[in-house]
Image (cartoon, rainbow, N blue to C red; front, side, top):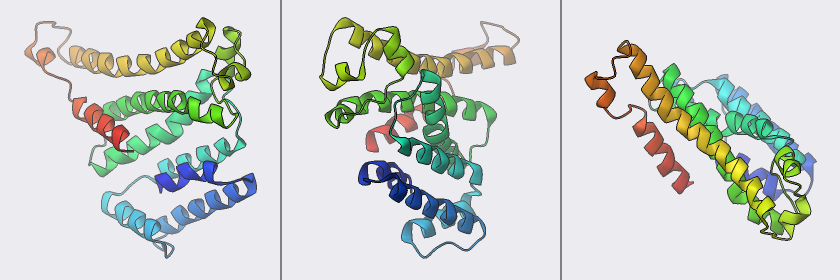
Length: 222
């Protein structure tokens, strides 16, 4: 389902077609949760996963709704809008991944939120050269304006310092999210031992490391 949704935007020439395909998946999810999945291979497998792992419907709907909004083909107004998109797509998918793994924990969800936002920001940056070949730029407008960089500068492939400064600022936001995951885990464990800096548990590696490594392998695969 994820690949189908992700490919819709690049495979259509009219927004109406994209809206119809999004509605198909929205209806499919509704039918899956009514225990009446459509006769479609992906939908059938999704129904089995929902039944097996008791997956939360809300995350599927957030992914579909956000992908639908993204059909408008316009740049993000600011970094917060990009982060919202990442939260409702990448992070939502990670929440479902955690549920599939049997992990239902607020701290794991908190980490997944930051990792998903970082992933979304990095994906936006990584896709920029490809989008530029199609005369499109989706980078946050507020950061571009801050450095006096236009969409045309990216489309023409300019590499002046102010262009690189835009990329630096956006990339830094992704880095902050990843740093937050590591720091938040350590501070949480510190509170658990009443801020005893010498407590043996603080010398152990983060329990969120497997999740982080899993996400890294997932990103390389997909």
